[in-house]
Image (cartoon, rainbow, N blue to C red):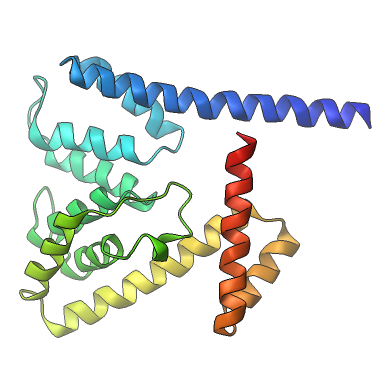
Length: 217
C-alpha cells in the first residue's frame, strides 16, 4: 500500500512539474518575441508543441507565415503548425487554416475541409466544452466565415458541415477516453448519445472532471 502511494505521488509530482515546465517555456517564448529574439522564441515554442500545448503552434506558425525574425516566408510549414494547433483546439489557428485551405494559400485547395475549420472556429466557447485548452473567441473569424460562405457552393458547405460534425464527435470521444476510466467513458458516451438531459449531465461530468484535474495541478 505504501509503495503504491509512493508511486502515485511520484507520478503526480512528475506530471505537475511537466505541466509547469511547458507553461514556463511558452512564457519564455513570448518574452523572447517581445525582445525580438525570434530564434530563441522558436526553440521554446517547439518545446511547448512537443508537450501538447496548442497556442504555441499558432504563434510559431505565425512567425513562419509572416517570415519574421530573419526567416523566409514558409507558408507550407505555417500551415502544418496551424493544423497541429487547430487539432488541439486553438481557435485562431482553426480560422487561419480554414482560410488557407479554401484559398490554397501555402498548399493545395480543399474548400470543404477549410469550411469545416471555419465552422469549428466560429462555435461559441460554451460549445467547445470538450477542449482541454479552452479556446478563445476570435471576432475576426466571424468575418472569414461570412465572406467565404458566399463563395462556396452549397455542396461544399454541406460537406464542410458533415466533416465538422464528424471531427467534433471524434474529438469528444478521444478526450473523454483520456479523461475517464473505461467504465466512466462507456457511461459518458451512452448518456451523451441519448436525450438532451442525459447529454447535459454527461457534459457536466466532463467539465467537472476536467476542472478537478486542473485543480490538482
